Length: 448
Image (tube, helix red, strand yellow):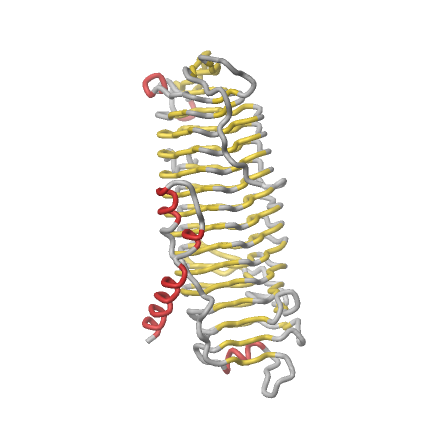
């Protein structure tokens, strides 16, 4: 019976929405088709059969949220008025219900600093319209090598749930998700704590229009598939804004990640099949870091005021290379280093604007191809294999220089001798040429 209800509801959502990817208009059919691959979930009409009330002055209204949930049945709504707020209780949502607050600013659930504030232990649940605060700081073991802190909202081994339009504050983890399916997180505000949102081993998860301010790590995802991050705003993160570790099939679209304190704006490791488009990353130490990942398309983004705009590298514990990465039509501006490519290959960089960077490129790669870039200064560092791989510079715009038929790119050619701790690096003067430099910059709209 449960599986049938879940499937019917899920089919209804899929028919209604066809989602975040299809409401996004991108240039290029390949980008549009990739963005639409993620599961879309529309929860707007779940046809709840009965409503139970908490607070308020109506006859039979409950005074505690948990009492109303205990009295509810699958398919009901529990509506919470704000007149008895704050509600000092830990809430176990163990029925297939909507739990809805009257006003997210004034309907408060306070966990008292002990344990999870809301634990979702059923399928087909909506949590909306609350301020949820003051979780505990106790560690729970989820498997043999993984422990996690208490959270304001915890969801484990559940499916078809949404968390929307809440304010979440005073927590170790705002929202924690583990081993779940078909989860929709939208329009929440998470404020000034340790970890904003963390999800592990989850399939089909959408993050839409959330605002996360002042966390150490804003969004951390590990071992998830079919992920969509769209139009989220992340500000003043003190360590890493978005971390994507061992992720497969992910679309990152229209997000704004603004420092000035974040070490990493977007960190991608040991992952594959990404579309990253129309994002703004500003003021981080490293705008985007991609390590040991493959099949990445990075387009129409704006990265500015970082130490390193984009860095492609090898994940230290695995020793795997990043490869098949396409970087095109981006504005990479006012950074110390525009792009640093290290131990990666099949890197295609074309039709970007690199403007007002102290150093537009710092490159150590195999089989890379650099074409049609708008570049200010370039420092080239390659491996001996580059002599055979023939990195290509073509149709770049060089800021401040016009009527130049050939542009000499001066740098160093480096190679290594030995292995392990006895390995030594040697560098020789080297140069590449852009044989057909562009005479004007490319028209790439800037994100603001």
